[in-house]
Image (cartoon, rainbow, N blue to C red; front, side, top):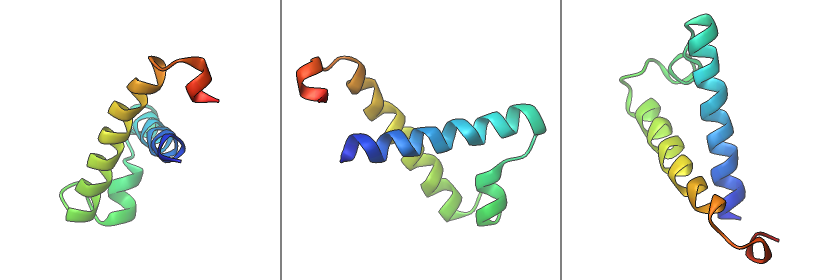
Length: 66
């Protein structure tokens, strides 16, 4: 369950970074009132922690993933 949540958050972060790179538009900042707001910073932090968690998925045995 944690793996799926981490993957979803990482995908959200990737989409956000893609929108920043292509359109110079930060979706998270737009939704939560700017990049400096507490809620935006919490979302950015959760996405970062999720990305670090997803690194562990790469190094697990296949039997554990299934």
